[in-house]
Amino acid sequence: MKIILLWISLSMYCCLLKAQSTPEEKLVQTLHAITDLYVDSIPKEIFVNSTIAKMMQKLDPYSEYLSPEQMQRNEEVLGGMTFSVGIGMEGTWIGNCFYVSFVEKEGNAWKQGIRAGDKILSVDGKAVDQLQGSLIFRSLKGEEGSGVTLKIKRREQPVFERRVIRTHIPRSSVRAAYMMDSKTGYISISMFSKNTLDDFRRSLLSLLQQGMKDLVLDIQKNEGGLFDEAVAVADEFLAGKEPIVYAEGVHMKRKTFFAGIKGSFEQGRLVVLVSEQTKSAAEILAGALQDRRRAVLVGNHTFGKGLIQDTFSFKDGSALRLTVARYFTPNGRSIQGKGVIPDVLVHNDTVYFTKWYNLLVYCGVQKKVTRDYVMEHRLELLKKYRNIGLFLKSFMPDSLLQSVCQVSKEANIVFSEEEYEKSKSFLLVQLKALVARELFNENQYYYQILNSANSSVQKAYEIVKSLDDYQMILKGSLK
Image (tube, rainbow, N blue to C red; front, side):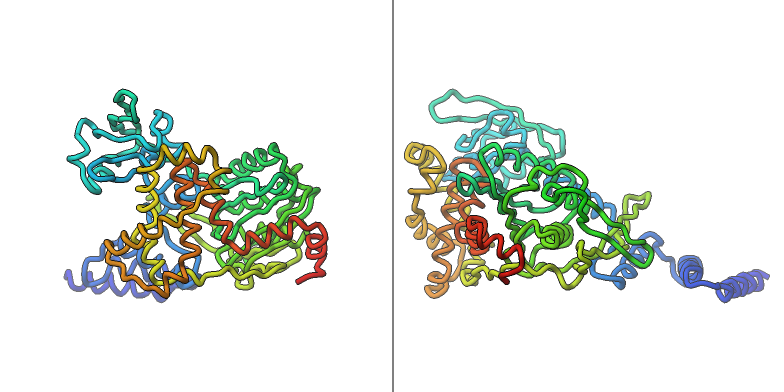
């Protein structure tokens, strides 16, 4: 009797499967059949999640299924948060002593008065000689909101203690902002997160107050991010009610986004740096400024990601990131695949990216050499180079090359004379940049010095300084 009932049940289920009238019904019924009738027990959640992920992969490179962990990480990145919780402090071992080498100004360590050059004596009562190697870094990490007590010695001053709270440290979207000369500013935007517009406006206002008349905007390595933030930044440059971008898809009617506010920099020469790593939202900004003849674009053909993803969240914290439309520039150019072609093409020199140099970066050789050097000579360096201007003008890092070779040898990196010669000139620039960062505890000095070896940045500066060249390129006379 039980066999007959089972047979009837299966027969009815088979009839229901045949009765499906749409592809959607077929999909749902297939899922039910597998999870309810398959010979072995199926872990439903794992099976469904993996099936959804495979379905998304068949659509396009950017549609995807995000697990709860991936979704949380995605929100943190776009929200401008760091990858981990911490106290906002970097350090290095010199012998058996541990020194602070860099302090994030947004972290709690900075707020508690800890500065580069401080010597850490103990962590939560445990002497640093018991925390050799990476143990000290692990002891500084912990859950958000938790605290760690540091005993510190600063040169001739008495020993003092600080209770430092571990927090998420906001990461600014503006990588660097400085004056290239008395009238020309430079701003680099790393991505478009929910804080980008505020970060950008603060940096722009600061440069305007310093006398900026013209601007070089660097989005060479900007991999995109939030659409709204990119549109808002474009609005800072465009006057009136000009279109910035429009989106369109089979299930989405055309929607055009216009400039609508009085921007902070609607006048003045503007050169925008782009590259193969300029993607998505960053391409929207570049395309809008180019179509509206508001900026000269310099660099390389952009990546070509012109698809809009929308996020659909599930109750368990996971989500679908689904492509719903395509981006188009104001003049109707599709960004997808074609990207944005700069007005002035510049190929950055990459000959120095040798195998030997890349291994140095991978092993952190340059960072170790410069941190040790600054730690040992901080006082005399600060006495000799009282400000960044003197440092830029006079400091020569040649003496550090021997240390690089020595440390690389200790790291078992095989030395190549040929590759050394190819990498030497850029390595000197990078060493100087790293010393500046460590000595003055300022990230943007690193980028400022590196830009002296960036041919796209130098070309942009030449163009922005020449009114005739700038206007000719903007009108399309030069290619």
